[in-house]
Image: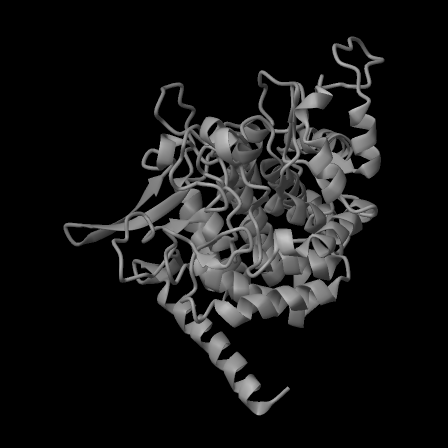
Length: 483
């Protein structure tokens, strides 16, 4: 590598770190998160708030750099925003929810945090993924700092329990997956992902594993048992029913409809004619496969959703064989899924009449833009994490090199448009914090794979769960009685 290349790389990283520093949000003199974007050229709208899902990539980076204080402050303050009382009224957040975002408000010289549970969001959809990301981040903090005492505090134990009660509650559904509305995750606009979308199921699985490690068994036996019951069922359900490869495609192609009873093979009554067989037959490599975007009654969404597939690899929701097959697919279909900017949020885009019907003619989700086939640089860190996990380092290097060549020159935009990600997003904010943090985090994971256990489960010390069960603190009994 030439000296001028080294200087360029150093300057890009330095610029990214400086931009990340500018994004830090302060409350009562303490850092508590990062704003969504620090683009002074346009009106802030809600981009001056700290979004729970957005902050995760920044938080992981802060943990790696021994700046855990900001992550601890974030966890403590967002926990205070969690509703603790049972509400049966409409338009009020349910007990256990973590808000989508929060902002610092100054009133008469006093600061306070104002939470948004979806009341001000597009379509007013309550975020399902916020509490799941919060659980994942709490575990990452504990793994990084070995500060088990934070998670074992009564307030945190109650917060974890309330999230688990919300996720594991009795419902109008018998699948082990979570039933959610459209727009309840990173894809926060109508895109036809209502039901049991892969992204939520992957985060749900990861959050369950995190909660299982962090819950003190005393006083939480019912929740622990429920998690132990749900985890294997959820894992088996996803691996079996969401998986698509050539063999699975052939089996579905020969499905019979209208089957009844326990001997039914086509359990979800999927009609073969509803699937784009000829496109999939050409697109699927012989040794590749992926997890479908959604499975439900007469529904098999064959779009490739990146976050769900990548996090399924990282969290071990996908089997070892499936993980390698997903990475094979990404490698073989690199131009489609990565192109000129990592990485497509989903593929292919909805077009023509399907776009109009499914999105409601959403002007932001036009074909190959934003959520509808747009490219999101934040996904680079998840692609690199999955590549490190599966020992596909060459793919990680390629992704980082592509991102490094463009992001700084383009001023760190939120997303890119076009079939290959060559166009800067039509409404993309510049200096988007999770774009910046995602790039830096990808480089850290690449340089030091030992950071992967922050979001993965391979190398956890075996005593973690037993420590949680045996851990005793003076206030446990108080917590149990209050819960």
